[in-house]
Amino acid sequence: MKKWFLIFLLAFSNLAQAYSIFTVGSEKWSANKTSHIFAVGYGEELGLQFLQAAMTRVKKIQEEYPQDQILVFWALHNTQEKDKKVLSQLGVNILENNDRSLTDSVIYRYTQVIRAIRSIQLVGHSSAVYGFGLQKGSRLRPDAAKMEHLKERLTRDAVIVLHGCNTGFYMAPQLSQLLSVPVLGSLTSTDFQNIFEDQNWYHNNPGQYPSEGSWASANLLSYKTKTNCSSMGCSRLKPNNHPYTGGWGQYTTGLPFYKAFCKFKLNSKGEERCRLGLQQMLRTWPSVQNKNFSSAETYRESVIDFLCPRLAGHDVSQKCRNSLNGVNQSFFFGKQMRCDLSGCEFEAFKTAEGNYTFNSRDYGNDTLMREFQIYMSFLN
Image (cartoon, rainbow, N blue to C red; front, side, top):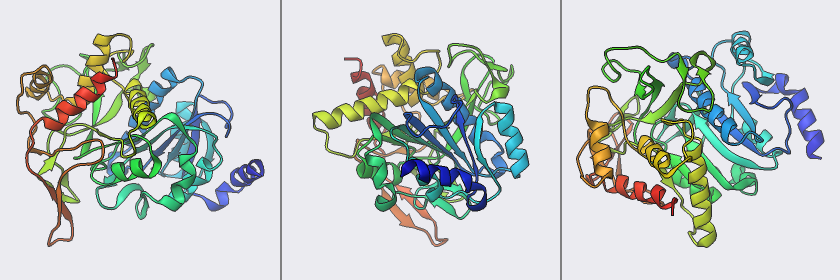
């Protein structure tokens, strides 16, 4: 039954659906392969940057899990033909390409027939209250009825990573509780980082990268082999070092890293699932060396790179590192809320303009220190 359903889906996709869908590192699509699912939302003024960040993570997954299949849903960026040309240059296997709207139902038609899913990655615009933006007017939100099929398909080491802004307030803990899987989300805006010629990651904003030098033409750090930046392997999304300020309002609290949530029963089985999922996330994090798990030292550096900000001309990175080394120093440009594996403590208020704002007490580096201890405990 599933086989005929999939044939029908692929045969009539151009008549009924909306997006580009492609696989990476797989010559032929197969519902029987353990898969990683990427949904790359609309970029508008950001151009191809969401796709670039997704492809960097894709390359890390290919390195760590070469046997797995990577399935990407990419919201229409330009026109059908121009999008197809971009994908052709990447050498991916295009399953579908058209000029209509991407919806969550499109994604679930595929995930319903996939036997095993190791990760789900959402890369794009997001709202703390309204969910992840696939395209304008089309959002993906936690939905028990639509997502019920995912629970039985997620592997023992599965993880969900929400790369957009403000995904940790509601969506990440809700998904973790709904699917009994670790989910990572942000508690502020996320912004793009690229590799500079000193082989460090910096936000690509004036004043936040070195004043001398240039952006790297190749990534020499995150992969076993040299990766040309023109092939989309040198970009990642990372939370900002300040509370969110943008189209959804102005918040006074946040966190400078992706917060992990394991909002399910943490018995021995649950603890194992939380640990394995977070280890998988860190293993595929585009970090500051080739192999995040090659030694205790490189593992620790990967954790610090994941948790600490980096801004050229500021000492925030060193202060964060000092804090993790036992010398507690303030470095976040705002209040830091307190969170655990189940959720965060904050207050949400609706403004006169109709937006929401988020506030909390300032708990300093309390959550950062606990998060660091969680990741470092995996070495024991």
